[in-house]
Length: 124
Image (cartoon, rainbow, N blue to C red; front, top):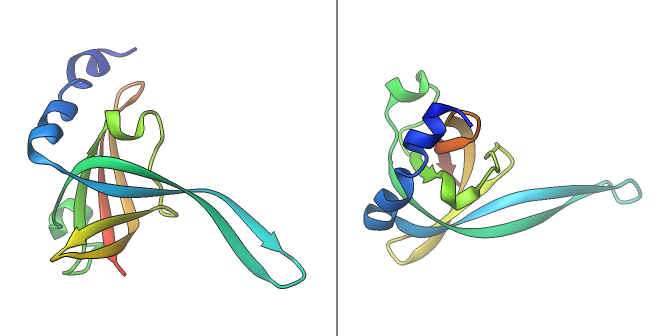
C-alpha cells in the first residue's frame, strides 16, 4: 500500500456522506453477441453509490465536453477496487425524473488502490 492510500483513502467517504446524494451506478459486467440475430445483449449490475454531481468545466477535461455534460465525483468506498469505464452509465434524479448519463471520460486518483473517481458523463 502506498503512502497516498493510507493518508487520503479515508477522506472521500465522510465528505460524500455529508455532501453527496445517492444515485445508481450501472456496471456493464458482460456482453453476449448472438451471431444468428446479430444482436448484442448486456448484463448489468446496479450499485447504489453516494457522490456529487456538478457541472463540467472545459479546463478540467481538456475541452472534451458539451455544455450539458456532468462532472460526477465518487469515492473509493462506493465502488471498491472497480475502475469506472465508458461502457458504464449513471442513473440519477433530476426534477423528480430519473435520468441516465453515459460515462465518456474517467479520471481516477490513486496510489496502489483507487481513492476517488471523477467522471465526465453525458445525459442521454
